[in-house]
Image 1 (cartoon, one colour):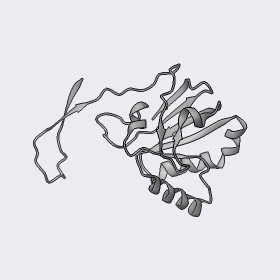
Image 2 (cartoon, helix red, strand yellow):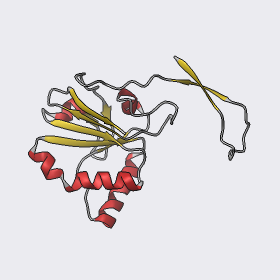
Image 3 (cartoon, helix red, strand yellow):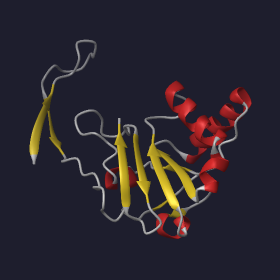
Image 4 (cartoon, helix red, strand yellow):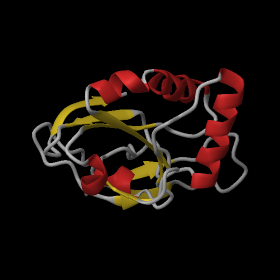
Length: 165
């Protein structure tokens, strides 16, 4: 395990002593791996990936936080194209470390402002358990904010593609 030394920014008012933080190795499932199973609260109730998938393809994607401009456009574009995904037997599921309440407020806001309903579940990963299983939290960048990732998972729950950006 590596050890990172972080120095607070000049704008912070607390001690300027370096912070010793143990950095966890980033663990991302590899293409060809069985996608990690999980049970998590979502905007559509509690979901267990292996049961919810039900033999379909899955696009699991993460976003850093609710109410952010880029994430809003990504979510709404997926929402606009939901029938195209359904025609391809593909389910969408998003994730961030925000709460179900925050997700619901955000999706209602998107529907009001952009006129697009988000018809797929958003995982409320407050514990970061799912994000950790999928390597969605970049060590050194944050301990709680997910980076943008996308996993394409086949009907047998095998990871077939990964986009990490």
